[in-house]
Length: 415
Image (cartoon, rainbow, N blue to C red; front, side):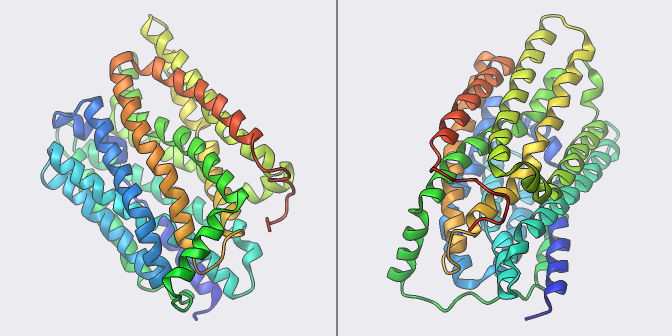
């Protein structure tokens, strides 16, 4: 195996280009230009989550059999193919196909990067460093995405005379994704465990998934994931609606800068997770993440209703400020949740178990996304945000009060 420091450095560089989504701030506008409304947008995004649902466990099984390296190469290639499909034949069918490829790419990448890091550290007897290293890598991932957003905003703004070169930002994204696949070829992590009989392997998966702490995390993850993803997919529709009061929010360059600033705000929070755990403990952080998201959506709902009723144009910036509030849990959640799982499951089925947990969350959110965007088209953005925010508070209280006794105590690495 290559020296630990060299491999860690490679994983950090890989993180910078894992999700270089330059076009994401403009996908809603690109779809709308080609005849898609909010219901169709919800269905297109739902296809992405459905594809992840179908592919999560099979790709996890393959990762446990083949090791992380092939998946670190395959995932970015699928993402590149998905983005290329969106721009090659812009239509409802092509958008569905492209989102399916994107869902497959994300499914491939849902476990291997974190497993590659954990197994690399464990092979060197350094697994106690996992939260620190995972938080650092998550921060780099957000920084890389933020820089990509800036590039996407510049390309969209100056890529054509109208300042609407959304297709060019998609081509840029596909190219950036391909660079991650090239980098992954240099990874030399720990080889997967020796193949076991299918019965033994499935028994290990069942044992890990049946742990009370892991089952509880699945319920918590479903709540948190829904509260994270719904507002994220609403940023562009929200900016389009707010643009009626504040036209500057429709400038592609400003949108790119805004999305980049969101990631730059989240990155330091990810790096700070180990210090926050030591300062306040895991229990406070697990409570704070979903409640912060729910409260911010309630503020956004109030702003939409007040602005549409004739409030001052400056009020829209309160809603935009809530985007930054939502980066607090976004920046913290990755390291906390994956540390929680990785310390509780065995190496042989690690990626499969992570994929099974991700499967549950994606399945629930795929249905919720379609339903919520249809509701949004019927009842409006403000009322739908209010329902999700209030429901998030209730779901958070329920799932945290039902956690196994003694869970989330302490500030040391979980055992």
